[in-house]
Length: 88
Image (cartoon, rainbow, N blue to C red; front, side):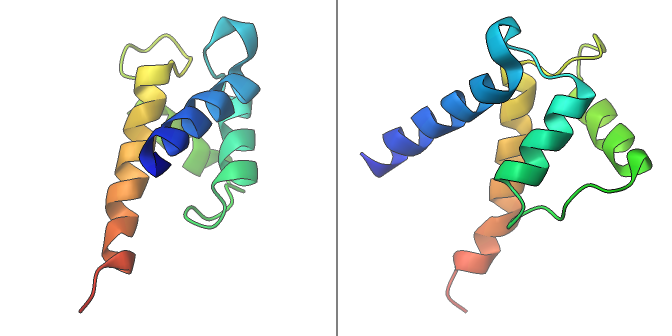
């Protein structure tokens, strides 16, 4: 049930920042990352960094991040952090 609880948290966090439109604009994505993921991703301070990340995530180029595009970010960060939790 831990995994299911985590999935619910991901959905709720996305909705917290996206509102009823269920899409994130660039400023909302920055706020979500800086407020909710700052242990795994360094705070975004440079606009160039945000622009590059946003462009990479925005697969359909509609200038918004939908839930599927957001999940790609979650998967990338989770995969990158996985090695921190593996025994060596």
